[in-house]
Amino acid sequence: MFLNLKFVISKMKEKTKLQKLIFQTRRDILRMVNNVNSGHPGGSLGCTEFFIALYHEIMDVNKNFTMDGKNEDIFFLSNGHISPVFYSTLARRGFFPVSELSTFRLINSRLQGHPTTHESLPGIRIASGSLGQGLSVALGASLSKKINNDNKLVYVLLGDGELQEGQNWEAAMFASANKVDNIIATVDLNGKQIDGSTDEVLNLGDLNNKFSSFGWEVLQLKEGNNIESIINILKKAKTLTKKEKPIIVLMETEMGNGVDYMMGTHEWHGKAPNDELLVKALDQNPETIGDY
Image 1 (cartoon, rainbow, N blue to C red):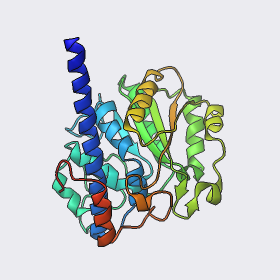
Image 2: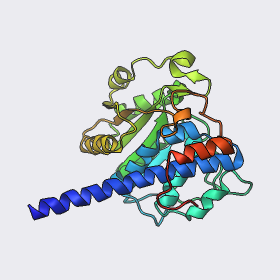
Image 3: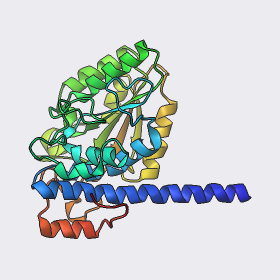
Image 4: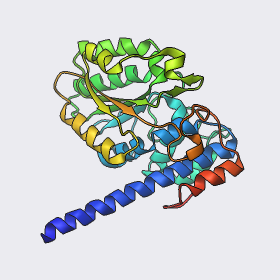
């Protein structure tokens, strides 16, 4: 009984730690985009729980960063406009100083609006501003790991509006035809893009049946802003790898999650809050670890 109690306490502490990281990451996102009056807070906030789960619970990563990523799990961000959440996560995980977040989108900063590689920022392996390319790159990395007998996994995040790019479907066909089974892709299904809802701009149809018909193993997550649910489904996804089928998680999220006036609309896809609205948003997300 004593050991069980210690286990429960340990789990409670871990849950508290992750929740603190969620609040702090939201603060980072909001402050970064406000500081330069530019950036994409909506999707970044919607994927905060996913990034915390991925980098603190799921992936086996090496903070001594190398571009080849040998013998470690690697991640690619395809929808590169949500760079604020990626940068915050990497900094809070120790890839580079947290203080560098204050340079977001400034001239000569390594933290450009869309991730780039020419400035050699630890954790960034591809430039991802043009949408639709990340899945193809991730599949190349997956095949490289297979060739090199590297048993670690490749993860990639896609936006739902991004699936309107045809290259994704060429990559989807390639993955199943070549039995690329060491990849876990996730689609951020927030139903919104810069011009409105995905249904209005270009309806994506039944993604479950589409990816299934393309030969993928499909997992669906309704609670994409619940970190425990994310951790559980990604752990399940890991058990399905190495079985000759690529894996994809269809994750439903809320754009602007954690900031009441940003939720339920596409208007904050690429718009920064002014100083007054920043204060309101920060009040909803208390400082927990320390602002940069």
